[in-house]
Length: 145
Image (cartoon, rainbow, N blue to C red; front, side, top):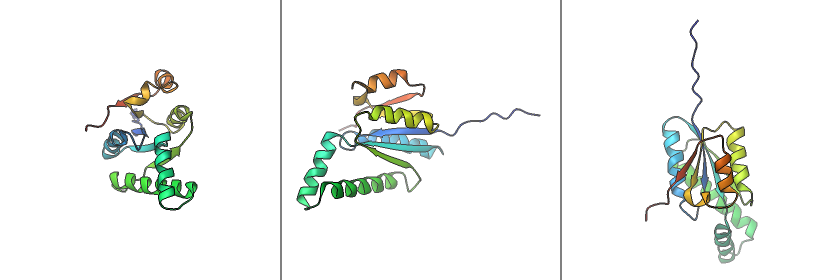
């Protein structure tokens, strides 16, 4: 009987900061999907993003939670468009320990790599998570101007 070599399906966990260079990690996720793999998108709602949502809420006379929900829905729709309607899992977090969340998701969901913006690697907590990661980490450069 022949041994069958099992190749795990490629699965990237792409970390996105929507107000800063989000497209670079989204492009990496798109490439994985194009090769038949899977993608999980973890969207970091940073202070800058939350400030933009607050401004939107005020301008539209909405509560902050309602504006945040509209923002999430629109962002998820835009990612769906980028991914051509292919199924991806999108997770939003405002958590200060988002680095742990990202690497926990990667470990428990069978990710084969984590893609993250270069800027995060220098941040406390993220740097440690990258160094300790058992999963390859792809560092995405800033988007070209």
